[in-house]
Image (cartoon, rainbow, N blue to C red; front, side, top):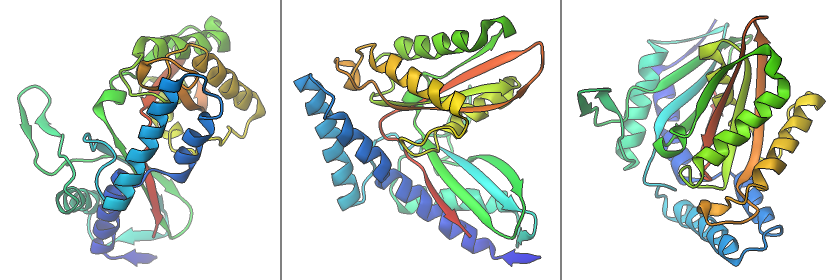
Length: 279
């Protein structure tokens, strides 16, 4: 059984919190640049260029891409042959505390959802844990801003709705969101599972790189169709019109009960932030 020191987790999580907020992924930057080739609207082109310039400034000056540095969502893959000296949950939260304090990142978490009271350090994180074979630990930090998170939705549909019903649901949510999630957006879609699990699938889908299709050809085609339909809505960058409403659509699926047909949409703004490390 391999052992990992508590502080190694803390330091890596702190670093990932800062890097996720400072450095936009190259896949997103490439996606934004590619979208310029398809844009007819000068306003849309100008907005995309400003987004690219913002990412450049954030990278060079090590400042947040967005003032909303997000709820810290953690996807943890924990090997069955590795253990942390101490509580890994506490280590992750100590890392978030360190990263958001030392990185001068905005702290947005209220201790009580009704009575408020800022925790002052962006803890606690939301941690999704998956046990995997081996002696490694993979940690992915995905800060989730409130504006795009608020545009998400879940639908407990009927089996008779079929895939066409899900497609319509996804497009309707994007139209409902309009400019609120700061497009160009990235759309995560979950299908199957249960009420709580389908929302996890939708958020997990957002960890894929722009242009990375679902390995199942059927769902890969649905992703491409949805992207085309969304970009035909004309919402455009920041809701001011254009061909680039979304950079990509990602679908994750899970087996379902014969009587249930859950689907979820989790929308991410153009700052599709996530960073990973394997320890």
